[in-house]
Length: 226
Image (cartoon, rainbow, N blue to C red; front, side):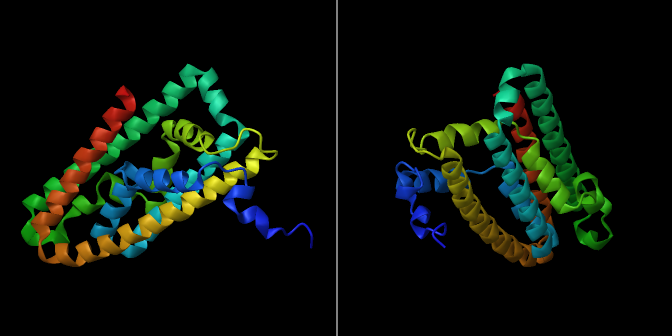
């Protein structure tokens, strides 16, 4: 079993430069608020931890697909075709805006019918009709800038003379996914706590719903303008 060399699991032997710096940068990047983490927190606080888990799984699958796409050269395709990049970016922004409007509308309905939340159909409006796995997966895949982020971020920590840069890339990707899933798990726990609180404070739940909608619309505008 000579092929099973555990020394390759050491960052220093995997072609990684400044692994501690990579960990620090990854943690700060994950902690920055974005549509993925906001969706998991919102869906958990409104519908429970099972929906949050489905959302986290969708994000995991979507980010994994994007990372594999980077390794296979999809980024060069987007760079060589501005039209394709703009199409994907516009679709992503439209999807984010659609989600935001749905969240905002549901929040307004819940605010106006806070005394009868059980009868409120706003929870079924727009985004609530989507399975959280599908919604989160689409969120991840319709952000073309994530591909360029992975390239720019990972390339700083890959030794240029390492013989197998693909191994280094996937090593960094796995570390990022582990940290990301740990963070999303904590958001699911926090969202579950919020769920119990919001059951007794429906207007606060409606306010959070509307805030999430505004933020998603903001993410859509940023994707288009930046």
